[in-house]
Image (cartoon, rainbow, N blue to C red):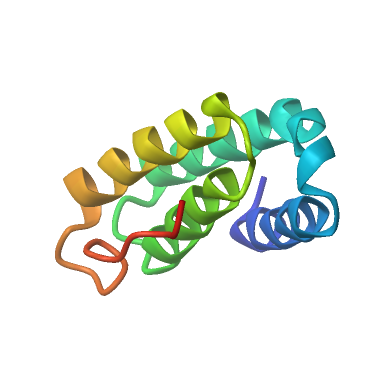
Length: 97
C-alpha cells in the first residue's frame, strides 16, 4: 500500500471507530493490514517523515476502541512510535485512552 493509501485507510478506519465505537472491533482485520503496510513502508523508507504521523494516528485509532484489545494495541503502537520516532513531534505525544 502506498503512503497515500495508508493515509486514506487510516482516515476511513478512524471515522468508522468514531461513528460506532461499540462495533469498532470489526475493523481489526483491516487495521492489521494497515499496520502491516506501515511496517512494510518503514522497511523501504525508514526516514519518511509521514511515518511518525501515521503511526501516531494508528495509536489513537486503537485507543478509541473500547476493548481491552484496542487499548493493548494502542500501547503496543505507542512503544513502536517512541522507540523509533522519539525525536519527532509525534514521538512524545500520547493519545487519550
